[in-house]
Amino acid sequence: MENKEIDLEKKYRPIVIILSIVIPTVVALIFSVKLEGINLSFLPPIYASLNAIVAVLLVLAVIAIKNKNKIRHQRLINLAVLGSTLFLIGYVAYHITSDAAKFGDVNHDGLLSEEERLVLGSAAMLYYFILFTHIILSIVVIPFVLFTYLKGWSGNYQSHKKLARYTFPLWFYVAISGVAVYLMIQPYYA
Image (cartoon, rainbow, N blue to C red; front, side, top):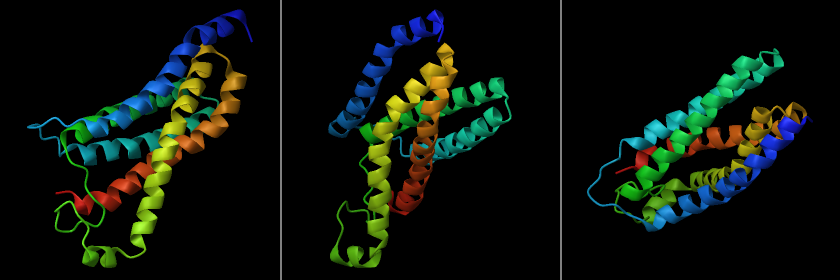
C-alpha cells in the first residue's frame, strides 16, 4: 500500500468511525421525536423504492467489477451510497412526522385486537423476523459500507476487495429486506 493510500485512510478513518456511531444513534433517537402538522405519509413507497434501486445498483456494480469495468463500478457504488443516504433521510423524515404502522392493524386504531392477531397467524412471525434482521443488519452494515468505500476511494483495492466480500451480502440483504418489510406493512398504513 502506498503512502498516499495510507494517509487517506488514516485521515478519514475517524470520520467513518464517528458516522458509524452517530447514524444509528440518531435514527434510534428519532422515535422519541414527533413533529406535528407535517404530512409525509407519501414517503414509505418512495424510500422502499430507493431500497429496491440500491439492491439493483449493487448487483450491477458487482457485475461491472467482475467485467473489470472499474469506472462503471465506482459510479454504481456512488449511486448506491446516494440511494441509501436518500432512503435514510426519507425514513427519518417519515418517522419524526408520522406514527408507525402496526403490522396486522387492519382497522388502523394503533392496537392489535385478538381477532387481528388470529388473522395474522404465522405471517407475524415472518414479518418480525425480517424486520428484526433488517434493523440489526442495517446498523451493522454502516461501518462495513463506509470502510469498504473508503478503502476503494483511497486506492487500497486489495483491502477493499476483501472487505467488499462481506459488505455486499450485508448491504444487499438490508436493501431487499427493507423492500420486503414495506410490502408486508403497506396494507396497514392509515
